[in-house]
Picture (cartoon, one colour):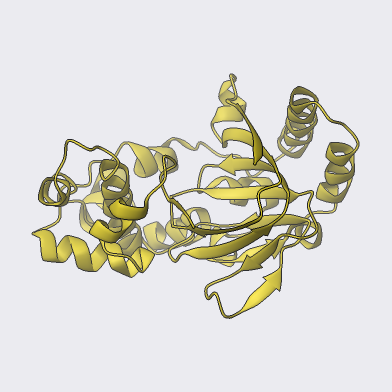
Length: 270
């Protein structure tokens, strides 16, 4: 099997406030590969330049063809992929709230869905054609950033993102509650719920559980930590609580995930 992987991290505030990174993976002679993609706290736009790849969404028994351009919102359930012979994917991994800013659609409409990007945004069709017409990763990155700047240049939907960003990444998970969040940001519970659905794709209560799950997912990749240590440092009451919540998001126990995990958090390959 031959594999090439490229990653680009944005270096301007306007770009990295929405984009986590741009990636490309090119595999050949790889045979059939199955992958489980677990919830990992991001949304994504992916260009599939290989027609033979299939997406198994929600259940391995329900295969559907993967769109040439997909938009995947915040996931709270695993997704399944089967990839045949060769693979060429170019992806834009986004902060969970980015789709609302880019397309003006509440993130709740994207949650747990793998949607046809061409049906969501006409300009993605042109971008796909441009990406397919060039070979260098650096050129593809430049085309993606050009598209991104055009989408955001006249965007009236770009209010101050500090509260949403802070809630996603800076708010401590210990003793986090709807009441404490409302008090911190001086918002009513109703307003907070609307913001959560619009920008994060799930309600506030579920997002609090999601934050704890994400914290535990990353800590499972620390070989120095036992499962019990991961449970307590991720603010679960005990290990049984940790196992129950982790399995609700992934379908796997923490022990099963640690046994089969790859070097890429949230991805399991078979």
